[in-house]
Image 1 (cartoon, rainbow, N blue to C red):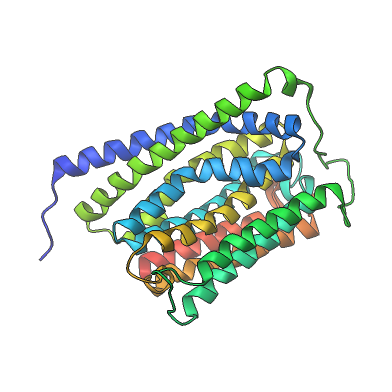
Image 2: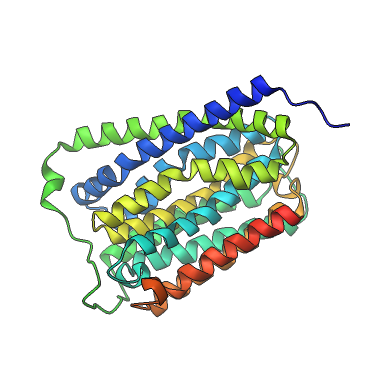
Length: 344
């Protein structure tokens, strides 16, 4: 017999969810400019800064949701939030492609660093599948795949950084290619002030994510929605708002490499949600605690990332409606995943 819905609890949880979503969106609008300036001032470059600084900062709310869900014995919500976030953030890149009217975004922002990050993301997602189908071995309730995910991520960042100083391959320059060049406005603020502002904005997103998980749990319990549906359709979208806001903002500012790197690098970092959740989950391997309809989103994310990489390599300059074939396919794959989730 279904539990009666507590209207007051549901209304309060929905209001808190909306407020946290608003905070995440507003704070995210500031991050693109700050990270772009830090990329210039520190010499990291847009690809590395997008992967590490922008990717990590905009992912703080998501990792808080996943880890706190795993800690409170909700592995399905933890993993669906992580995997749903990767999928929807890839769709956000397609939206940014639409916002860049001059040419296909993947054509204009092609860079060696972004392609290495794409390969890293595919490797990390594949490791998640290996963990899912490997034996349920654990040490202190942690699966062996978890430390491998952290090591693979760090090695991938090393490759991205090394490629900036010793590139062995470069995309052909066209009239629409936007080079990663420092802007004069980056020197208007002190480096210390930029770092402090970056930390403050990142902390705000993390706190909003923690409150978001609490409200999402109540919404799931009161409405009867599955944890997978809440994770994929609600928390992953809400906690991914900074990626949408910062990506579109970066495109508007002309920081195209940063826009693409923020999504791909953020997605690579988001695979560590699963690793961190496995550490927090005390019921054994979290990779084996999720149902098949959640694991399906790993395969979908691999497919969507592969399509994105093909777009970065092929570099279609003008597609139908001025967006590339990869953007159309990514949107179609995400919608197909939603249909399969609801139908399942």
